[in-house]
Image (tube, rainbow, N blue to C red; front, side, top):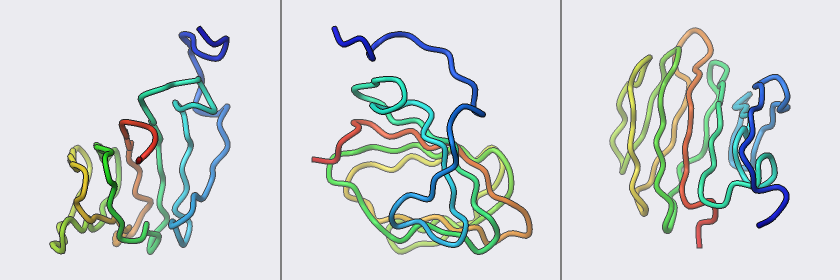
Length: 122
């Protein structure tokens, strides 16, 4: 078993904000659990905060499933061509192959958790 593959406790302040490829306008994320941070082999867990007008471009995944859990703010989630307002306490499940994007269309920051499995989209 790899040394990096072990139980861990991390504080959110330990991880820097990043703007990943395909994310624009202040769409920032902290990669809290994943291969680089904890050695996770199956799970990617991030918290994201999008400033007003920030967004991730429309995309889909080949094999990955995703869950978005909105913690604060509101925005527009596009799923397979349909846009829906999402806000605090909404939980969105995305199976593989479904085109999707999320944008902050609100007046304050949009904060949400994104869980993705498996880690690689092969």
